[in-house]
Image (cartoon, rainbow, N blue to C red; front, top):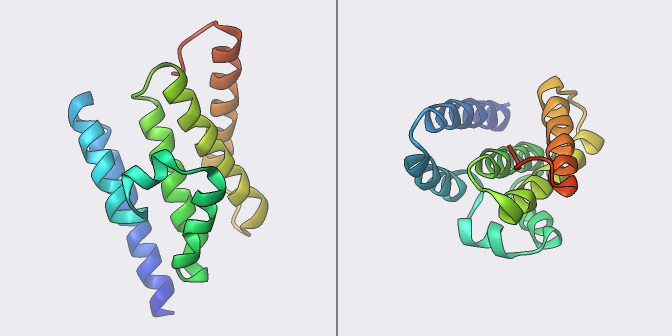
Length: 137
């Protein structure tokens, strides 16, 4: 019960912090998002250089009851950062976010309308980028 309370507080804290970050200017957003990687999921440099297989394996260091929530935090960070990154880099972040959201959607017992909406948005943005119709946001 205490572990569940901890992760729920952590999720709430994460959501509030991300919301505050997204209200700042773009330069400050990038810096704050990098710090959020380090604080909530792990080294920023790791999650931007490793393969998705390595990303998934990295979650083994978290207790089982926290993994889906930590994955969702990382997906949210990828998603937020993709909105600040144009071109191929933004598309790659969107693909990473989608892969995590999709994994969570298929394996977690909790249905999330917000997650499904983000997945639909990601698909739409990636399709538009592939067609050369629009930037990734």
